[in-house]
Image 1: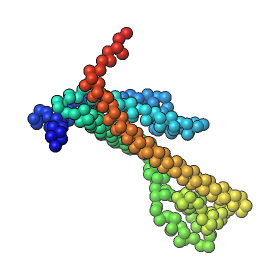
Image 2: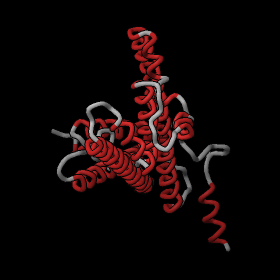
Image 3: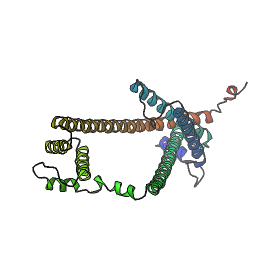
Image 4: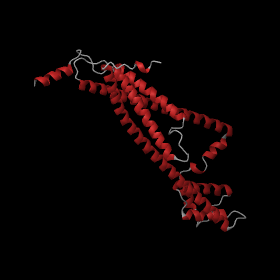
Length: 298
């Protein structure tokens, strides 16, 4: 009982009212870790190790492996450095046991890790918001300039086929056994555009739409039924191929997002461990009066 009480008193001894958390040392370590991350990320982007520009080379697996190793190296090295600086700068508390000193140093390293993550997330959010605002403004200015140049035709063209959400349904109700609607070439063109837009949205043309399109196309002067069928079949295959490519691209983006999220989470866990370890090493060097001046002598 006496030994336990003595150990407890040794752990809790210190200046009355003083906080065990030294924010100045934590802030210094977090700044150093953030600076290293920014520097090494910029360097990696310069040599092509970045997810901003998707890789289209001959060996994607090798590229993403190199990218994962690079991100892991940046995370571990930056948090080791930040944790070490915090552990080395932190003032020891008199009367604490060696184990308690190690725990407090490691805890300071974890706070460095948390502060760095918060700083990085804040900077990323601000950068993303600024990019979105800039893109929106530039798009609005560009759209206004284009409309000023082209005048009213721009507005009318933007309201053409896709502006009427029920245009396709209206056309379907007015069909008469597959006979094309009257009204001339422009009416037929708009009706065809609505059918194709519906097919592009669905990823395929229905059998009824294909038959109807064939009749509209074959009604053009000088065009045979067989040629009309070939044209409709070609555009139907093109719509199907485009839909498959879009689905494949969406799946690729989804997998890349999952990979990026997993890599981020794994690197953050490694970063927390590295910050704890770095702070512990810094604390031991502080207590042992470790002299590294021989590394700086020329």
